[in-house]
Image (cartoon, rainbow, N blue to C red; front, side, top):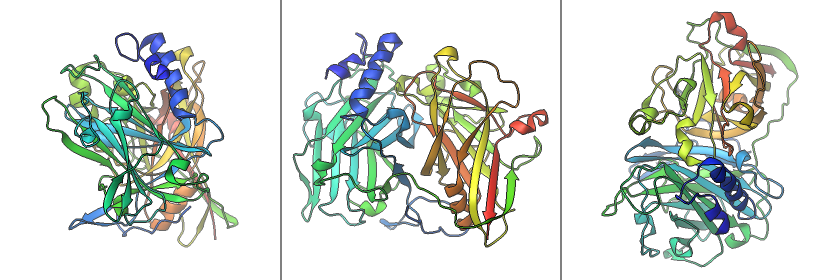
Length: 486
């Protein structure tokens, strides 16, 4: 409780130096002691969609979205947890980032939620928890699509501090969900005018679940390569009188008691082992500024729209803004949910048509050129993650709200802040995308990547050159280098 109180000022907000120090305390308390399976290819066609499809109420899964949870030794570093997301931002809709990590003792799942109106139950009961702002975390520890005793449901409602009466846990049985009493922690956080159930505009809230593996009946952490099923349900209420607004879920088709429609939680990041001798290579990047090749786009807190403070803009326009033709882009996130108008993701698509048929991918590298960052001397290094997008998109129409979700996270790379102007084309940074290229090549689809981060620190934005930069800076454009063999 002390750690949770420390992350708010007397006004009940995260902010200023006191808020930053408090956030560091919160992250330590929550993210530490609280703390590769080959997918089946989808139906041929473009764009490829890798999300479950629901037909007549039955989940027909082609390729299920997955979170590859990194395993850490000791404390779970918040900024290096795997990231995924769902939902949309508007006055009446919520968006959420998911962060996931594990160590030898526990699973950590954190939700950061953009929410205009925060409401909690003043007299909660287990049955009423999901009628207010709350999160349900669903797990199936044997990875089966069937509902069983390996199926778990953890519920936690927003409040000012950890509150036993605002959390509950259930286990599957032949009779349905049964309430059980097992240890787990659910630590809330929030950001807004005051957490007192009022009608003033807020920014959002957070919930960090820490679930010991022993509470799930396990004697040790699942081995690397193990697969569970996982889903998240975000419950929302925007007034005291109610009723609750409709739930949002990850994956979008998830249903409370149907593990077949949940995502996959894989333990460990996917690896890639080349088995062929190199015989050919290819470099892909946009050749001229007006070429349609290698489309890319920044969504959210772009460099031209970074950290806007106008309340109408951030709730009504921010999520629907297109910046697909900008010559540069920002990648940014942090643990203070109040600053979500600064958050930004980057989407880029590389064609693979020039790789000959019937080859084996030996290696592939993404290169981006950094020319700046947010925060000046206060900026911190960022673990920028690379993910595979779940579907195609258009450079002229993509926005934060309509951009494809992530299908799978595949790795990351550290990017340090720049202490001075580097000159053009900027400082090159690389990501190993061999696994992602091999998967896309096998499916016969372009390589569709998303770059995002699970950062904690303020001033975490990193600025890069986009495909739309002028022809004078062609060397700075995003580049994919692929090596193949027979």
